Length: 306
Image (tube, rainbow, N blue to C red):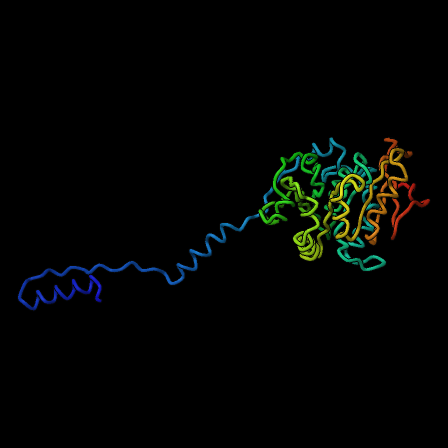
């Protein structure tokens, strides 16, 4: 069937042939549609839906007031101690250690019990690594029961790790870029009654594999729950290449530390940090550290990371 436009043209021609004077009038033209319009219409929503990591600005002066490291801080004993602590971790993470370790750039920071300084250690370790010339660092708040990283950074709680595992968000939706160039933060996310199962899921394994392998220069630090308080940290430990155990000097019983270390026996490499160790500095306190394969106390555990 001919179109209405074609029918009108035929009728005008018939009138002209019959001797009827018909003024010349332009025929309506169908609107032109670019050949790639359909592609553009499909591509545009996809591009608009592609989430960019959100940028947040940390109050560096407030971090310093809490005793945390910051890029604008003058050189201090605390900064020097973390330089000593991070060095073997970075060496292993970059595959330059004595042995090749799977997921060596995934570093879990934990403790036997609450209140030993693991979150303080996680943040300072991340800040110290962010000062490196050749590495970037992601700090993950994996203490899903009692998240504290965002609070210590002065940021509001928001979606994060658990939302990714539930497929309610992608990592780019929830990852926070900071005004410290080489530091990003992944919040713990929306509380979930089956957080342990989510951390033990295939989705978590796939996420960690992707995080470990996507960027060769990135070191990922997980602030995890205390080992003797919840089961989440034991599940998380099974995926880690290195584990840092923070021990509060003159407070944590050796038996508690030994139980905690037994819970992460499968991890090939553990670093023990003695927090609040009394020293000879003007502050009177500092860090001690012990390092090696396996676990246990040794005479080196009381050495000062000066």
